[in-house]
Length: 280
Ligand SMILES: [Ca+2]
Ligand SMILES: [Ca+2]
Ligand SMILES: [Ca+2]
Image (cartoon, rainbow, N blue to C red; front, side):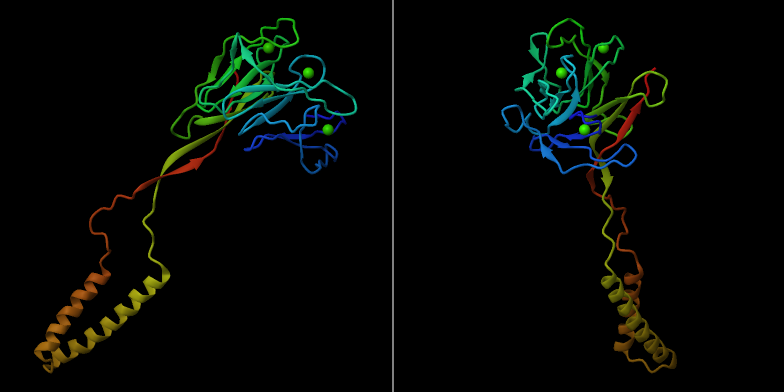
């Protein structure tokens, strides 16, 4: 995506605090390079702030030929910053909240992550978004003439919310791309999830193992000495008792500590996968 129109692809990124960053392309397509990041500002020079956990996508939302910014945030809103257009520099207008009918769009579970693509191939850019619940929603552009597109009630493309790593979990982020080159847009879906992982019982440290082996060697040595005394009939009663104690001690040392099955406590780990959904 070439936001500044200099013929070189640029990178856009949202952020946890919310500001939007642009890395202007400096190299060629064969050898890409990027300038230091800069915060995107509106035409008043104010830093654009769509809200925490922002996402950003550039597309011509209002069809005037200039790339606009389409943003998501943790509240699940979708905000557009129309680019008023200028060949010299980017001129983003103040934010507009995107509506469906009369309702402001709020994605289920927040964490909207919108993109604009012509999903149904009618020539109008539709709105697709990931969400905190994991659902991926499709808002068809009704294609009515006007400065701002109007959207149909959403359809759920991906359910999300899976507890295992076989299907998308929560906070889905999406990319539409014709992955298998059959002329139909496919969906790449990134997610966030937690899953139970066994918590392995802590292995004894090297020091502990060494100390145990040293103790065993000493016990073994004393056992051999006492056994010889017993065999030759030179052992006192105390020494015979001592021998029995040592043999028991050795046996205890060689027996694994957990004689009963031990249930490893479960903890939850984080995961993030990318799923590919090929369009039928
Ligand atoms: Ca550029
Ligand atoms: Ca535009
Ligand atoms: Ca469309």
